[in-house]
Image 1 (cartoon, rainbow, N blue to C red):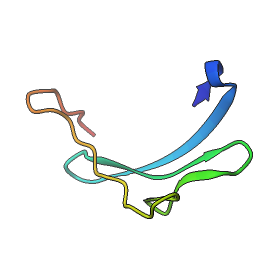
Image 2 (cartoon, rainbow, N blue to C red):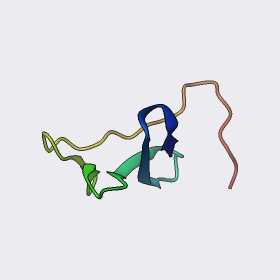
Image 3 (cartoon, helix red, strand yellow):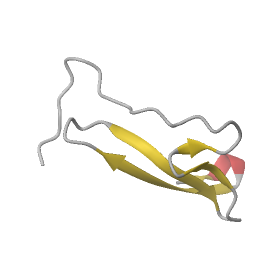
Image 4 (cartoon, rainbow, N blue to C red):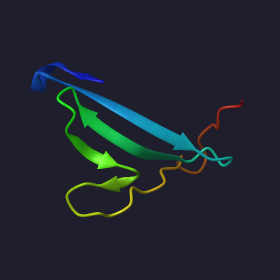
Length: 62
């Protein structure tokens, strides 16, 4: 993603499961600094959460 206002480009990797939940596995800057690595926040070690659609919204078909 290109955050023009912050003059920054971030690269993300996501995984998804059969229920169409998604989870961020890594997030890094152009300089190679990670905020998320191996599914954990670098600053505190907490796992990233699974994100899911709100009830009643359409689910994409694969």
